[in-house]
Structures are given as C-alpha cells and as structure tokens.
Amino acid sequence: MNNLLAKETKVFQDHREEWLRDHAGAYVAIRDEEVAGFFDSYGDAFTAGLQRFEGSRSFLIQQVWRTDPVYFVF
Image (tube, rainbow, N blue to C red; front, side, top):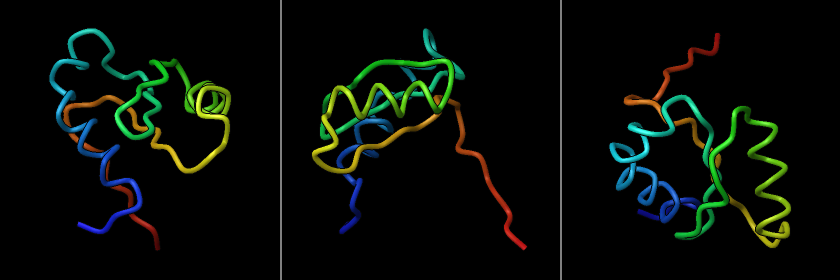
C-alpha cells in the first residue's frame, strides 16, 4: 500500500476497538505511531496536531467510530 497516511491509518485500525471504549466520537490526531490526543472537535485535533507535530509533515485526524462514514458527492 503506497498511501501517504498508511502507517497512521494502520495505527487507527489497530487501536479502534480499544479507543471506542473510552473515546467514541472523539477526534484523534496521529503521526507515524504517535498520538497527539483525543479531542471534541476536528478543529481542536487539527490545532493540537499542528502544535505537537510542528507542521513537519502530514498527520491523520480521524473520528473514532465503529465504522467509517460514507460521503456522497454529486
């Protein structure tokens, strides 16, 4: 898999069940295998990710749900 955020996506998938117990609905910010924390809003997760990871490169923000949402664009 040659995906820009493949490592971060794997970390999320590996920990999803664990995080659902304590952080369902929260947003998590991840770079490599480092978690910046869990946040009530996307904006808070984004700000924390920029501060923690110092904008050095991309990081993942994902909402903790059992399944990923599906979006339709027309």
